Length: 103
Image (tube, rainbow, N blue to C red; front, side):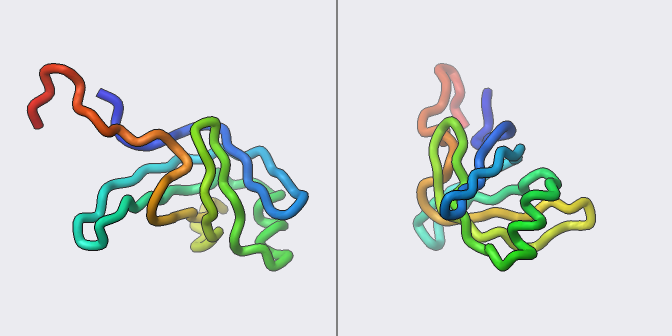
């Protein structure tokens, strides 16, 4: 069974700038807030670091499955920036269990 999430190519869009990147995203339904919480990391990329160093903090993250606005925050020791959001994620979400799955 495929878990919710996305691992693959994406674009970071800010104004007229579009950067091709690789992302790893996941998410879950948050029962307390009543919304979907998604999060992940953008693979280390000098162009993304330059964008953040230039003052850009909020971007549109686009995958082949969708897009969402997200902040670029919390760079880890490997140079990967965190992305996150609440509501519709930029990837398909599993909404039905496969036949025979009785979780």
